[in-house]
Length: 167
Image (cartoon, rainbow, N blue to C red; front, side):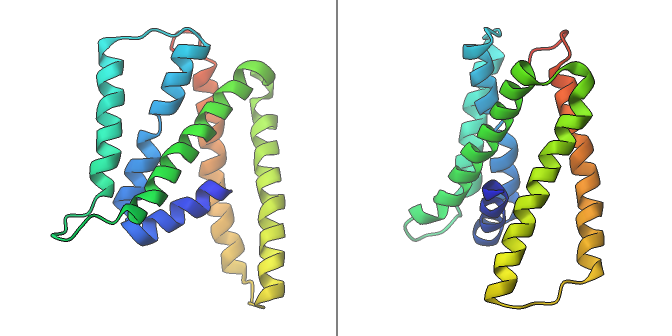
C-alpha cells in the first residue's frame, strides 16, 4: 500500500509520465533477481535493456530547467522504482515457493482481501482525524478499479508459472 502512496506523490510532484516510467521500468529489479536466484539466462539484450531502463527512469525524472536540478524531486521516482520492483520480485518469490498452480485465484483474492483490510484501517483513521462523507460512487470506483487489478495479478502469476518462458 505504501508504494501506491509513493506513486500518487510521484504523480503529483513529478507528473504522471514520470510515475508511469518509474513504475514500468522497475521490471529491471525482478529480472536481476531472476538471473541471480533462479539461474535465468544473461544475454546482451538483457544487459542493454537494464541499462536503458535505468537511464530512462533518470531522464524521465529530471525536469528541464535552467536552475540546479532538485535532488529532492528524484526521491519519489526512485522510491517508486525500487518499491514496484520489490513488489514484483516478492510476487515471483511467493509464486515459486508457495502458490500451487491451481490456487492462483485464492492467492490473488487473499492479497486483495488483505489490501482491503488495511485500506479500511487507513480510511477509519483518516475519518477519525477529519470526518468526510464516504459516497457510493467511491465504492463503485474502487470495485471498477479493483477488478482489472485482480485479474492482472492472476494473469501475471499464471504467466510466471509458464515453464516455456523465463520470468
